[in-house]
Length: 547
Picture 1: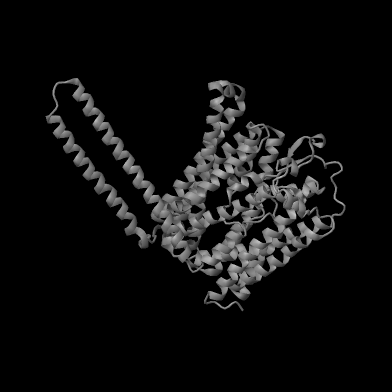
Picture 2: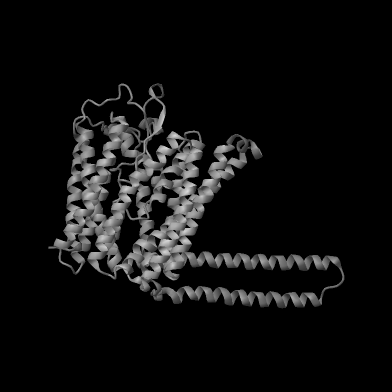
């Protein structure tokens, strides 16, 4: 988790520095990794289901850490020889470097998704022996670790990059990843040996036969094609004369046949991947906890958290970077209280009822955010979005005028503090490292701080219910998804989380001005209400009684 958090924070800063303090590359990385999980989430989950646990864990670990190591090496070279690289191949070499970095970052994220699904959605269930109380304790403990590491890791790497240089930051991440790879490999292997049950795994019987059908068809068709092509080649060979033109024609035919076989094989593989995605989404829909999973995904469509959107808005309302850092620390403590509340409520009222209570608590706190939209000091102006929704959509609308800008400074805020954390956390939040300025903009203070105070009071207090609800749904998924489908269903859940998370960035693109933020708050609360309504429907349909 420490390595993940450092890397997620650092890669966005590195790309901003490389591209001249422009957010384009960071946005591209976010879109690429989000799109990859949307497309390949089910396929990654299927790979987790169809392979031995230790193979999945070690394979994902090596791919993830190997990608980060290679990416760090490339970044070190680019930072060190940037001028020479920009002049090589008429500037195309630097483009190739950017593409390789983005590709490696994407590979690391997919591997991280696979490792998270394997360890936190499968291994810990086996390790706890399906003990519900033990599973709840482990989930809460892992969430506490992640929240604390989320702050400390970004602070650490940020201080290194600020006090030294980006190259030193890359070297630190490179060294950490190498050591982490060894330690994680040893620990995972030791845990695997300590828990013999991890060696036994139920196969995906429900769709194994259908998947093998594609393999048999591909092999049969390929064999027939090879025999037909071989026969055709033999017949042609008997008719070949010493004429060199005949030899040339024969080579062209053989080349065309090989190209056809290669194209056909690739087509069958694509068809198989599409089929895996289809059965993955179908399996997700057929789960008894489908509505619970959807409710969690809907909570990702929100601007009510400490990402670049909300903190950027707060800065336009006269909130300093130091105060925002303090609010981040308070929100982390409140989030830890949410994990404690989850344990207490589950013991007293049961798991399903804990979700109901935490949902009500979450919604009640978010009402403060709704009140902030209409409170004194709110910049809400509906007429601006009604008249011209695309007026002044540049980043300048979220920052101070150029004449008032001070030196750019990166505050070490956590990436994804607003989201209910499935550990396959949305990597679109790599763009959420808030970029602020060293001092407040002159003449940019609101008439009243009541609105912004209510907003952050709601955001921070809501984290208690948010994390309790997140842990509730996480355990419901762990307990109710069959072992043979844990990978593919949780892979689809990751895809849903990414999809809903992208929606809130689209909302900001449509309404980017600070005057529009109140509209975004209302839409966000609407999505959250829709998500919790789905959970209430799930509760009504479940066999367990809430109270």
